[in-house]
Amino acid sequence: MKYSTISATHSRPTTRRTMLALLAGAIGLAAAPAFAQGTDNFPTRAVTIVVPFPAGGATDITARLVAEGLSKKWGQPVVVENKPGAGGNVGSEYVARAAPDGYTLVLGVTGSHGINTSLYKNMRYDPVKDFEAITQATLYPNAIIVNNDVPANNLQELIALLKKPDAHYSYGSDGNGTASHLGMELIKNRGKFEISHIPYRGSSPMVTDLLGGQIQVGITGLPAVQAYAKSGKLKIVALTTGERFASAPDYPTVAEQGFAGYAAPPWSGFFAPKGTPKPLVEKISADMREVMADPKTKEKIVASGSEFTPSTPEQFQAFVQQEIAKWAEAVKISGARID
Picture (cartoon, rainbow, N blue to C red):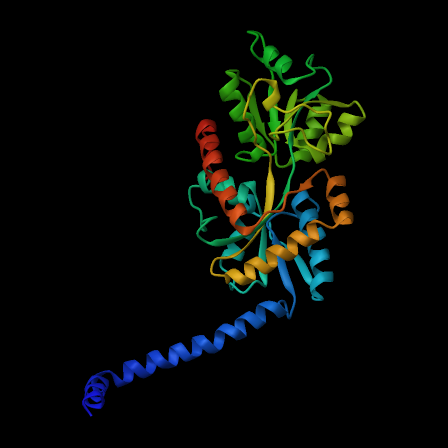
């Protein structure tokens, strides 16, 4: 009787609160197995991968190769949607605001998830706080190239030319604040030389001017210039990967030409909106890594000038945080800023 009296005394003033708590707990317990089952069956409808750049570029190619493999594996459409603008910010912000259910993903890149948080004065999303890292996708070198009239066949010879008192050279990049621009600024800072920067809107117009002699030096993605180098129309003097690139082993790196530790290659990777359940993130990551391991898919990405570099969500999250810190230094050195 004593036990029953105490129980009754404590229950009267908290009946409504207790009932609500018990109801919430019951809903949670019921939802847990349902969610687990939903993860096992994911997806049950079309999944969208947003590419925050125009169709046809390296990022778009990567997204479509992975989407094709996932569609076959999942038995559901995986649609690639291009949402370009503001250096990748438009498409990335769109996904950051999407429902955290795994059905809307973004293929972020060095700019959108590494550089822009330091480059743009008014960022509308946080590359870490607003996303769940899924897996890194690709990595490819930027290539430092020179016009055939430039009497330099490697990076050290080029720097020696640039340090001459009568040197009048300029270099083109993919644009102000891009990985190509900032990567060259890091080299300038360490190498103690000067060369004027001319930002372009992408690699195509820059390469055209380089071929025509309007500029003497350029830096852009290897896929955009490899064919010109092989045909003898341009000279590649260095690549920006930390080690020699497996699909282009004949080209020396910046690091091995007097810049030990230098590594500034562009990359891409998949992200989901923040709050996407961890089991779902892990499933999508595992499935993407399986797709990227397919020999035929790997062959296609290598043909495009990139390499797959898959990782776990935890590995990719740590990598992104390191990249943000590295590129913040590069933005500071360059003085670049976009309002």
